[in-house]
Image (cartoon, rainbow, N blue to C red):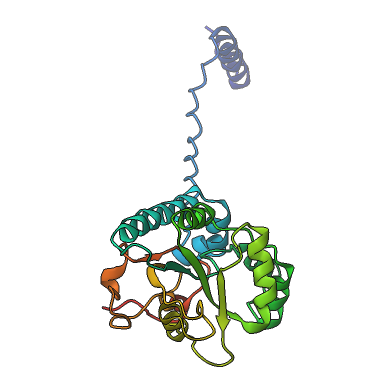
Length: 271
């Protein structure tokens, strides 16, 4: 057999390889791996609200808007009214008796003044306070109107002992009249100029019937004190009757005031 030239053999081999390759099915490509699933983003952390931030400015809202504040006021005045009625029954017939109320945040609600100052970011100062008092627009606090009516119905007298200035007397009386909390025969006792910041002297005048804060010649048994600051109440030993911490809930009735007071700048609670 004749031997084919090498060039022909190479051509034949290449042709056969091409034919076989064309007849074979195409190889199935290997399945690609799915892309990695991206990790779900972690939920954003809730902002941490610290107590001072959470409470900032809410003390005024608490007084103006919360049901809790109104309920506390009503509750305190109802308890005081019941105590007064019990104490009156124990007095000799014909006795002169009275209740003593503070004015600000005890009788009249000044949260509008506080709100206006907060809106402008400015603190209390005497000029703006006097202007607010002159407006005579403070509403009665919850519970006080019913309490005062009840005292009058039982034959008691009402004395308002306040650390408002003497120059605020007329406007304060107008405000009390506007809220139906004033009648002829009531006492209104502002702070004497530069004296008696604790109110002890004026309380003594009510009891003894002597002085500017008195029904002249008519000593009065004080059956209840109502206020929002500790200075509104007799200190231990100030009177012969029950005073000091043991008197609260019996003869002294403290109303809530989260807006201002000595507690904001110093520790007032005994430890």
